[in-house]
Length: 203
Image 1 (tube, rainbow, N blue to C red):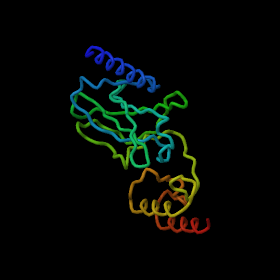
Image 2: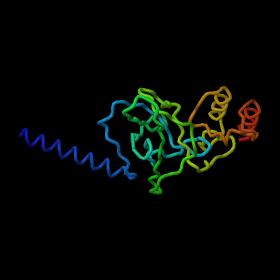
Image 3: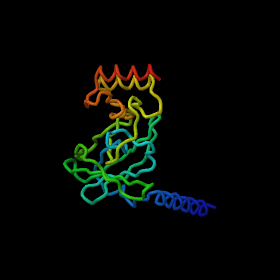
Image 4: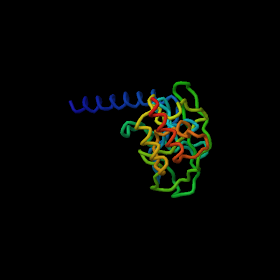
């Protein structure tokens, strides 16, 4: 009976492993053993303006040093959003340049990324947070409506609250910069706030 239980567990592990490989369309993989150090990255796939894409689960994310994969991300639910949780591995305590790749499962191809701030490996460091993740920007413009800064299809008090937060310097992954820059000067201030209030009152 004990042998049957062990055999059953082994078969279950094989099935789970096969299912995981089947979902990984990119083919990226990284061994979890053989590394001395690691760091953590929280990230989202984003449009060129930095606003997150709607369906994070349509993508795969991995970290690389040169051509060597150093970690493949899991997707986490953080509140009402989804973020990628990525453990990046190394055998040196610091100094390696980390690059990221994004695979679009709907197009079955790797997405080109706009240059983002360089990430250097540092043991035990954390880049981004679940509530303020690193934006891996695709060279694709986001669809948006002026004033609808969270892209939910309505211009209301939620947008107003997000605009106030933006002016005060708060980071919120829902904020679509292009939709909130109502006077088109690439800055966020009382003028944008005033214009947004007028839009809300006119709806």
